[in-house]
Length: 114
Length: 113
Image (cartoon, rainbow over all chains, first blue to last red; front, side, top):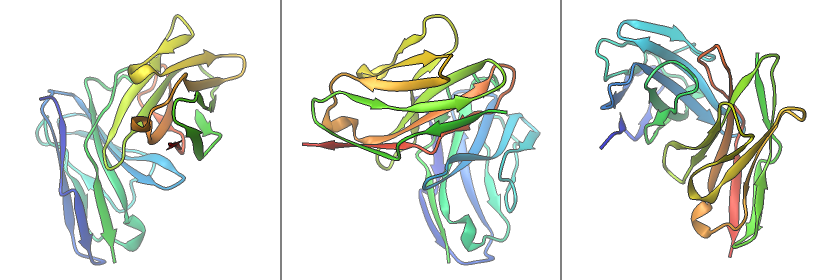
């Protein structure tokens, strides 16, 4: 089954404790992206990757890191999480970076930073 | 640059009644337009998209949307809603030569029995 998986689905952590949210897709998509979803703000892009070893900042990259060592995986790293990073995070992938293509979303990771 | 405004944060509607979810956009260039749906505790999935051609676009689950260039709108409609349509609906836009989707704030569709 074609899908995007994220782990963990729920995470509660404390300020400053490094964490990684994993994202994996099995569709051989080139383009992958991380979003955060906050009430009343819709989705905002954090980082995206056009292909292996090619990443770039989205609209809200501060406090986040990413890497793309393999085509299927695109982990999101929070080196020192803060309470303002409490949010719902989505990973998405698409065949190509062209915006006309459908984006496929993971199920989301709900992060709470206390 | 593009921007998207979804005019209603919530739309309550009785089951089997018609519904319209409104989306307006602004852009200085030609655009692609999308509606995505997010069911409770799930990720988003594509409902429909407008790339070119006919301005009336049909999507999954009986939804359709009409692109109106003069009014810069892309409203989503369904003639008869069901309880299973309870979800949050997001409108998104992108320029035709860039890669980034710009998202609206979302509209929650609340179905009343």
